[in-house]
Length: 381
Ligand SMILES: [Zn+2]
Image (cartoon, rainbow, N blue to C red):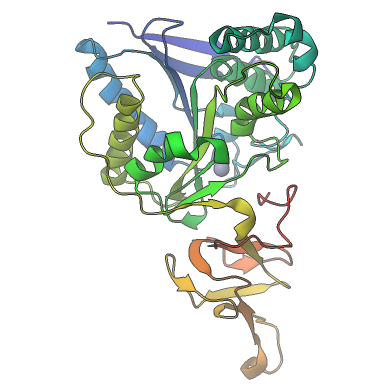
């Protein structure tokens, strides 16, 4: 057996309180490939947590059989801070209530200063370059001096993930079909994750500018590669992805067991686990540019009545919902149609049907880039 379990303290924000991360580690430290998986960084997104529970049970069995080949690190609860944010019975796990913002934004920029640090160590050996870059990123993280629970959470999770070959951040959407986000450079080698999970969309984006968790680990490589050009071989050595395990209410053992089995087969395919994963399932989606996926927004406040179901294929101009003004004097004129701005698949809808102006009410996955979709606005907040 190789398994160890660590508990990492996040310190105390008030006397007499302390939260911790539980870290399940399998395999020999430093073995390759290293896979890092965490669930529910947005703490009110529970499907990934249940999938991680089932995956840990499968990994425990694999470990007992000697089937761990690489190093696998699983953090089933990535955000104990948000997990405790229950106010009058309602869970608010997306934003830190102390004012730290969206838990999946503003992660540290691990590329900053990296070029200057590693340039003298780069050479013609790609593997040696990867080791030098990982070491430099690790040193940078070790020099960080977090002083709050939130900053400690970010530093500790980054320390666990930064040198992994594969980083899987398990989230969910409001009400949605399974989908994955990744950099376009990784789609050819890692679209099997989408196939194994039955994803209905593979949303590709080099840099959303949101400083999300996954991009924290993939971007240093693509930025370094761009900075050094042909002078030194720099692989995209960290595949990092956000997996959206459908919607918030999709928390069932039957789904989570299948999802964990899909993750397990993915880890087998990439050499972290022994055993034959069997034939690869057919992909149910293409990898499409995130700029071709529209976030349809509410023009004003009201009640949303959907006309298009999840999974519907819609055309530009189709009415996907009507916005109802429950205060209109004439209720026969209280409905405003909301139309799709692109052709595509209705991937997600919002769970809360009372909306404010500008709220995202649906994601529609198209194939043609949309002029109004640019970096900085690609992810909804
Ligand atoms: Zn999320």
